[in-house]
Length: 233
Image (tube, rainbow, N blue to C red; front, side):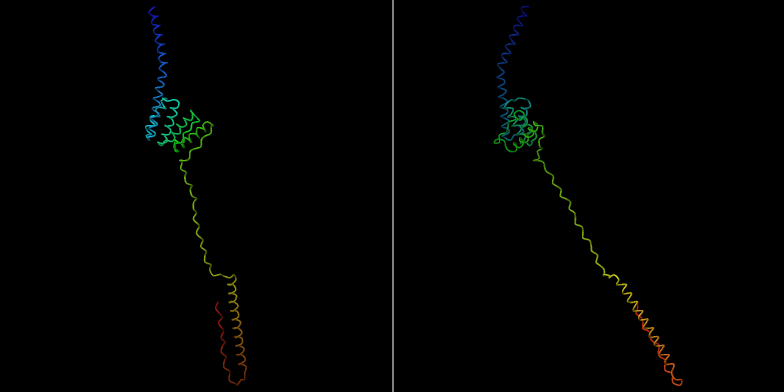
């Protein structure tokens, strides 16, 4: 019984001692972890400055995803990661990382002296979307890189060929044909009348000659009158 009580006291003393030791070592461990995180972020900064963007993304993304950073180190790592994404040609990933910074610190803005315009443009788009998410209004789409299709030209209508104007035939005066026929008919009637008058005159002359003296020599017969030929139709 006494042996069991002694074991209990020893166990309690060991637990208390371990607790006190952990409390003493916790600040040292936190400092060591913080120093290690800061050094890794500094290494990521060096990768970025040397244009080794693939290495910077690999290192900083691992630190952020594992939750190995806090406070200013986390914010700095996210900024470098976003900028490395933009430089590598991944603006969407860079925009999302900038929005992660704004969610933890809405007043954060990149330094215009250190951050070049291409990275600032991606941050501006991230800021618009972040503000739209807070107000419930959809952010305007980024059309700076969207090619606008050319406006199709209106169809060209070929001019209609001019209509051929028929060459007018000889102009026919109304009533001219009828008048010509009437003239021809009148002329023919006149010729018939003249022919009849000549015939009657010839017969009368022949009769007068036959009524002379019985012993006298008969006058020669008068030739038959010649009728004028009527004009053709």
